[in-house]
Length: 243
Image (cartoon, rainbow, N blue to C red; front, side, top):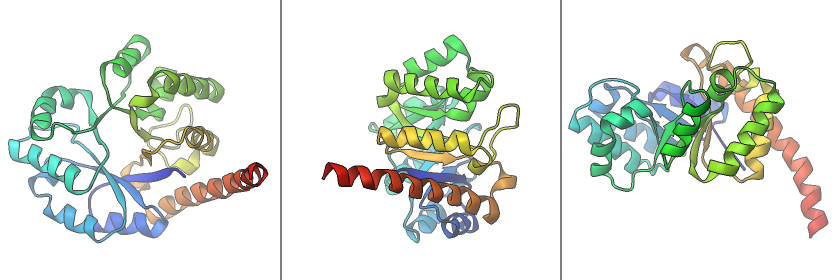
C-alpha cells in the first residue's frame, strides 16, 4: 500500500503527535539551525519505527559542516530521497554530491507555468511532484478531471523520475497547505492512481504550522484509513477471482 506521510519540524513533540495520529512516515523540514547539530534529530528518529525524508533548507547560507550534517541525516536515516528546491540545488548541489555521490535528490516544482514546468521536469533526474502547486499555479485551478489527466500524462512521461510527492488538501481558490481531509475528492483520486502504479515514495500532506495539531493529523490519517478499507473491499474480491 501507499506511504502516507506528514511534514513537520524535527522535534520530539511533533513526532509524537504524528505517530499517535497513526503516521509511520514523515518529511522533516530543515533550516540552518537544525543542521548545526543533527545528533538530537538522529536520536529522536532512532526511538521511532518511522520512515523519513529530509527537506533541505529553502534559504540561508550553509557552511560545509551544515552540508555534511544534511548528508549525514540522509545516510543515517536510510532515506531514499532528499527534497530540495531548484535555487538551493544550484547553490549547493555540487558540494552535496561531493559529500555523497549517490545522493538521490528530488527537486520540487514551484509556481511554474507552461514551458517552465516542462523545463523543470526535463532538467532533473529526481523530482518531487507538488500536486497542489500544479493545480494552483501551473493549471490555474482547472477542473479536477483535467488535473487528474495532466498527472497521468506527466507520469507516463516522467514517472520514473518521481521520488516524492506533496499532496495537501487543496481546494481551488484557497490558500496553500491545508490538511488532506479538506479535499477528499482530490486526495483519494490521487491515492487511487498512485496505488495503481505502485508508487513507493512518500506522499506528504504538507501542512501549515497552524494545522499541525493532533486534531488535523488524526483527521488526515482517518481519511487515509477509510480509503485503505475501501481499497481492500475492491481488491480482495478481485484477488479471490484470480485465484
